[in-house]
Image (cartoon, rainbow, N blue to C red; front, side, top):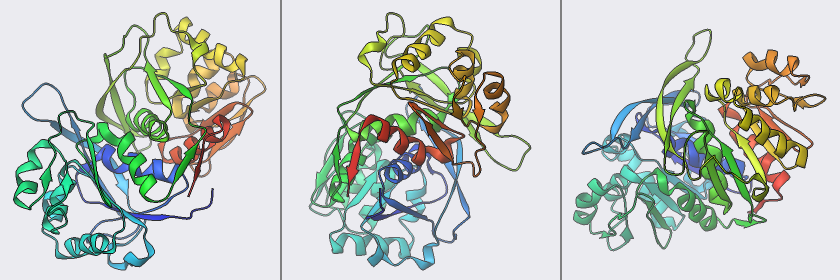
Length: 388
């Protein structure tokens, strides 16, 4: 897909982890060119992110997320070259809303009529830029008073996935609303989706990698696919803890606690025949899921049927354990090469780390930086297309 649209994401230290990476990589997978900037930083610098989750307390919890690498320089931004703006939430908007350059940039996008998609606490920047006066919008509940004071027609977020559209302005309450949020923004950019009447199953487990489940899951939902997630010994509504694996200069990746991920279906009694594809996230879950015979049988069913199977990072440990890599070409996280080779697969070097490969019905990727390729290659196998 040719990049016929270019969008800007306005970043800052301790923006919410999901709220920057999910729209960034989803849009890239759909063929949109994405530039990410932060005041005072340049291309190649990184922003620490925050994991905001709901753990039963009076407000959300916060822990450290992935480090997000910027690909453009704020001081060099020419807004005439962009077709839309995305503003993540988290804590960054609290101080970005006081930055004159940020406020002026948002005003320019607003007066130009180009679509602005802002989520959670990002709406504090909209309020500072006087772009919500007289317009309907939502946000995380605690930003309501500021938006009302700025003249907004406040829409109460009765559920975490609420999204509101008013002209070129798209607002959402939390990252749970990403599927509709991204879908609405894509539509505002002139995007059209075809072939998305697909059912896709995610094979989950405790301490799967945080990005590697949420990014493809919500990306496929944003296309209009029906996506389910299951985990052995768990049922619909149960949650899996996730792990944040990042590259921070050590000999191997670091690990931090991630968000908890809600399952949508029950593993026991699952009928795989009703699904069009299987996705296997990486992280630490595949180490033990590969010991579960029901899991291996499920993987064998999908592979033998010729349905698309997309597996990333350590997910290929399950493929190897299931004996389905014999005669197949694939990649994985480099430390999983041994599993792939011993499993009879032909190893494809992931150089650079975002490389993904398709061999017949099998899509494999090495790590979460490859999500745009990973999702787009799965889309090809599914027959899902985005035109821009």
